[in-house]
Image (cartoon, rainbow, N blue to C red; front, side):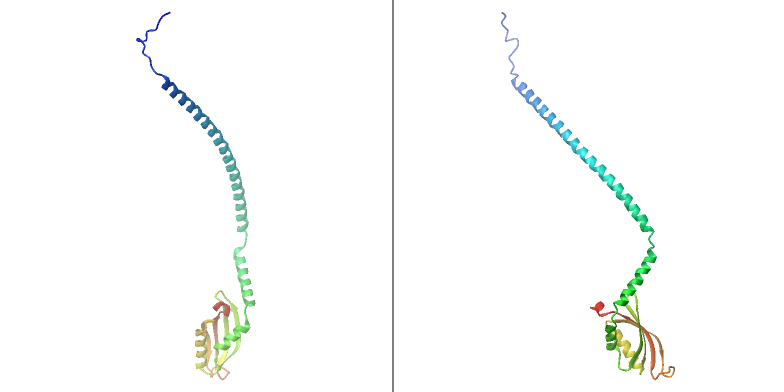
Length: 190
């Protein structure tokens, strides 16, 4: 039996290196397992997201086709004629909402005693009602007083005389006049 010469090969402590190698190897195996798990779970989530994206793209193309079809059908609608019909209908509805009692009450408040109306013709406009008034005033001052009263009253706006004739030019004993005035109902002024 030979006795090893310990002096030719000194004793080296290699245990810490082996421990470090073993821990690093275990850590590498653990991290590799985590990486594989994350890869498969991520690819499964990616597959779900891709399937959802495909469903959404299909839904978008379907909605896009429906919108194009609806736009094409809307382009066939005669909008100008429809707007004219709606305007006429609004005029009819506005005429039905017209209250003659309130109008006559408001007119009675602004007319002086020397003014007599014999024609009142309302029409519906975008601003409200337009009244065509024909009447006779005993004096020119009474006619001017009526215009001033209409200007001061919140229910009437823009009184515009259309014609006026003196007693000498008319067959009556007073000043005959025609005027147009805007009228707002009581609900519109409150």
